[in-house]
Image 1: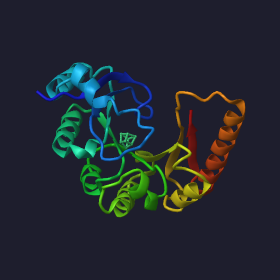
Image 2: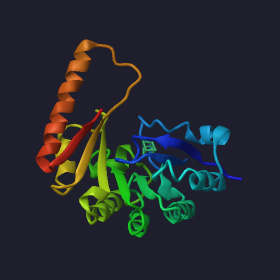
Image 3: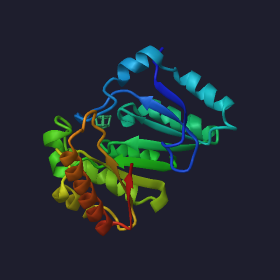
Length: 228
Ligand code: SF4
């Protein structure tokens, strides 16, 4: 029986909620800084079946208020995703969906049901096909459609996230992205967690880049934040 990644408790994956996290392995993007490349193997070794996940949450409802469905890219498994969203809502849990935005039609469909959607903005949309999503057809328009889908929601029901990875994000990219979002959209900038950064000069230069990107984000939305 197929297995999926599952974390029983998290305080950081759903704003303001104690949540569990379900990981659906597999992704159509190729971000070099991806932390989930080993996910399929980890799921094989320690995964949970869908039935085990739903049963656990049924029993943990007094402790858990929400579930975050993440990946990989969850929209690559539409039937599993639909099943999980319905099962969690039937249990009275709030549901957050993390997505890279490559399947706007499914986001549109699930937007009616899920409580919160987080979408990554990795670089200027016109650069995706070259460096992040080679082989994904018409990706720029799909990302635009996904952004529009999110921005039709109440402002506290979605967020955009950008990892400050310097091969993909600079001041020009921040302006490109900023022009696409609404002035009340929540936009979180996340540190790029590298294994080894030791040079003091590098750290100072990096801090300056982060501050510049943050200052640009704040020009476009009143809800720009840095996530440590
Ligand atoms: S979209 Fe997310 S899961 Fe997919 S490669 Fe990029 S960082 Fe990894």
